[in-house]
Image 1 (tube, rainbow, N blue to C red):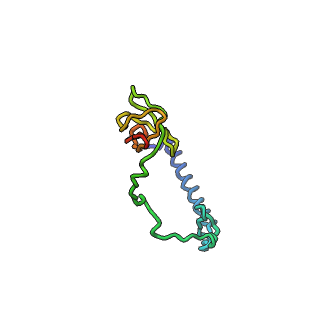
Image 2: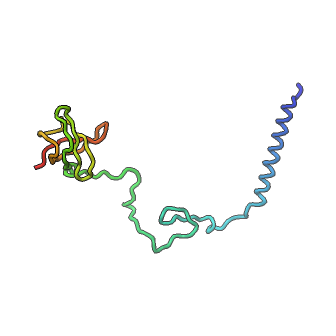
Image 3: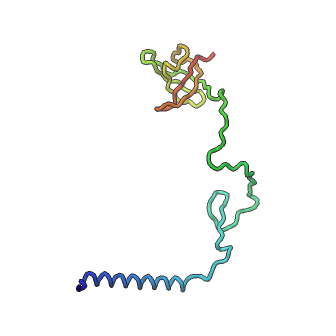
Length: 148
C-alpha cells in the first residue's frame, strides 16, 4: 500500500515536533540552577494574608488559643427568646385586604404582617411588639400585639 503525500507530511511534522521538544528539554537542563537555598524557597504570610519573601515582624505577633479556632460550622448558642421580640410602628394596614406593614424601630426595615398573625385589633401609627419569621417571600411579622 503506497503512502500518500498527506500521510508523509503528517509524519514529517511529528518528527519535527519531537525534535523541537527534545531541544527545549535540553535547553532547560542547561539553564537550570543547581539548586536553591532553603531561604530562597521559603514564603511568608504577612498580617494581611499576602505572600511575602520577607519574614513577619515578631512584634506584631498575636497569640491565639487553639480552642478559639473554629473550623467548619460554629458552635450553636441558644437564642434568648427576648431577642426575638421586636418593637415597631404600623405604617400601613388594610383591614379589607387583611395585610399591612410594620416599620421595625431597631433596623428601620418594613416587615409584612398578615391579619392571621395579629392578636389584637391594630391600626396605622400604633406601636406594636412582634416576632420575625422568615416566609417564602421574606420576613413576616407574627404574634403581633399592641405595646403596653
